[in-house]
Length: 110
Image (cartoon, rainbow, N blue to C red; front, top):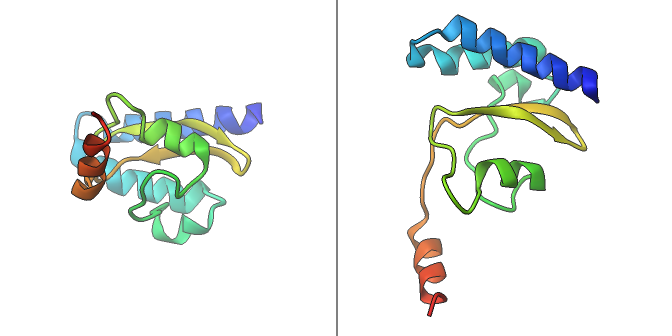
Protein backbone atom coordinates (compact mmCIF):
# COMPACT_ATOMS: atom_id res chain seq x y z
CA UNK A 1 0.00 0.00 0.00
CA UNK A 2 2.98 2.42 0.01
CA UNK A 3 2.14 3.76 -3.46
CA UNK A 4 -1.45 4.55 -2.38
CA UNK A 5 -0.08 6.29 0.71
CA UNK A 6 2.24 8.38 -1.44
CA UNK A 7 -0.63 9.25 -3.78
CA UNK A 8 -2.82 10.42 -0.88
CA UNK A 9 0.05 12.53 0.48
CA UNK A 10 0.47 14.11 -2.96
CA UNK A 11 -3.27 14.81 -3.25
CA UNK A 12 -3.34 16.36 0.23
CA UNK A 13 -0.42 18.55 -0.86
CA UNK A 14 -2.33 19.59 -3.97
CA UNK A 15 -5.39 20.46 -1.90
CA UNK A 16 -3.29 22.47 0.56
CA UNK A 17 -1.44 24.29 -2.19
CA UNK A 18 -4.62 25.16 -4.08
CA UNK A 19 -6.38 26.26 -0.90
CA UNK A 20 -3.52 28.46 0.27
CA UNK A 21 -4.52 30.62 3.20
CA UNK A 22 -8.19 30.79 2.13
CA UNK A 23 -9.90 28.22 4.38
CA UNK A 24 -13.22 28.79 2.60
CA UNK A 25 -11.78 27.04 -0.47
CA UNK A 26 -10.81 23.84 1.39
CA UNK A 27 -14.21 22.11 1.18
CA UNK A 28 -14.86 22.76 -2.52
CA UNK A 29 -11.30 21.86 -3.55
CA UNK A 30 -11.33 18.69 -1.42
CA UNK A 31 -14.67 17.69 -3.05
CA UNK A 32 -13.29 18.35 -6.55
CA UNK A 33 -10.22 16.20 -5.89
CA UNK A 34 -12.36 13.45 -4.33
CA UNK A 35 -14.63 13.38 -7.41
CA UNK A 36 -11.57 13.15 -9.64
CA UNK A 37 -9.42 10.68 -7.65
CA UNK A 38 -11.48 8.64 -5.19
CA UNK A 39 -12.42 5.01 -5.70
CA UNK A 40 -14.95 5.13 -2.84
CA UNK A 41 -18.71 5.08 -3.42
CA UNK A 42 -18.79 8.59 -1.92
CA UNK A 43 -16.90 9.85 -5.00
CA UNK A 44 -20.06 11.20 -6.65
CA UNK A 45 -20.78 13.29 -3.53
CA UNK A 46 -17.27 14.74 -3.46
CA UNK A 47 -16.21 12.26 -0.77
CA UNK A 48 -19.05 13.24 1.60
CA UNK A 49 -19.64 10.41 4.11
CA UNK A 50 -22.27 12.36 6.04
CA UNK A 51 -22.38 12.66 9.82
CA UNK A 52 -21.31 9.62 11.85
CA UNK A 53 -20.14 8.88 15.34
CA UNK A 54 -17.64 6.54 16.93
CA UNK A 55 -18.02 2.88 16.02
CA UNK A 56 -19.82 3.55 12.74
CA UNK A 57 -16.77 3.35 10.47
CA UNK A 58 -13.51 1.40 10.51
CA UNK A 59 -11.38 1.53 13.70
CA UNK A 60 -8.68 3.57 11.94
CA UNK A 61 -11.23 6.36 11.31
CA UNK A 62 -12.28 6.24 14.97
CA UNK A 63 -8.66 6.55 16.09
CA UNK A 64 -8.13 9.61 13.89
CA UNK A 65 -11.49 11.33 14.37
CA UNK A 66 -12.50 10.47 17.94
CA UNK A 67 -9.39 10.40 20.14
CA UNK A 68 -9.88 10.75 23.91
CA UNK A 69 -8.02 14.09 23.89
CA UNK A 70 -8.11 16.94 21.37
CA UNK A 71 -10.39 15.67 18.58
CA UNK A 72 -9.62 17.39 15.28
CA UNK A 73 -11.82 20.46 14.80
CA UNK A 74 -13.90 21.27 11.74
CA UNK A 75 -11.59 22.34 8.94
CA UNK A 76 -8.97 19.70 9.73
CA UNK A 77 -7.64 17.52 6.93
CA UNK A 78 -6.31 14.18 8.19
CA UNK A 79 -4.31 11.50 6.50
CA UNK A 80 -3.06 9.41 5.09
CA UNK A 81 -5.20 6.94 7.03
CA UNK A 82 -4.59 3.35 5.95
CA UNK A 83 -7.44 0.85 6.32
CA UNK A 84 -8.30 -2.51 4.82
CA UNK A 85 -10.20 -0.55 2.14
CA UNK A 86 -7.27 1.60 1.04
CA UNK A 87 -5.59 4.83 1.93
CA UNK A 88 -7.70 7.87 2.80
CA UNK A 89 -7.64 11.61 3.34
CA UNK A 90 -10.43 12.91 5.57
CA UNK A 91 -11.73 16.46 5.79
CA UNK A 92 -13.63 17.19 9.01
CA UNK A 93 -16.40 19.55 7.89
CA UNK A 94 -18.55 19.63 11.03
CA UNK A 95 -18.48 18.35 14.61
CA UNK A 96 -21.51 17.89 16.82
CA UNK A 97 -21.57 16.73 20.40
CA UNK A 98 -24.40 14.46 21.49
CA UNK A 99 -25.38 15.70 24.96
CA UNK A 100 -26.89 12.34 25.97
CA UNK A 101 -23.59 10.58 25.33
CA UNK A 102 -21.66 13.16 27.33
CA UNK A 103 -24.12 13.07 30.25
CA UNK A 104 -24.05 9.27 30.27
CA UNK A 105 -20.27 9.24 30.25
CA UNK A 106 -20.14 11.79 33.06
CA UNK A 107 -22.72 9.85 35.07
CA UNK A 108 -20.37 6.84 34.99
CA UNK A 109 -17.43 8.91 36.18
CA UNK A 110 -18.00 8.56 39.94
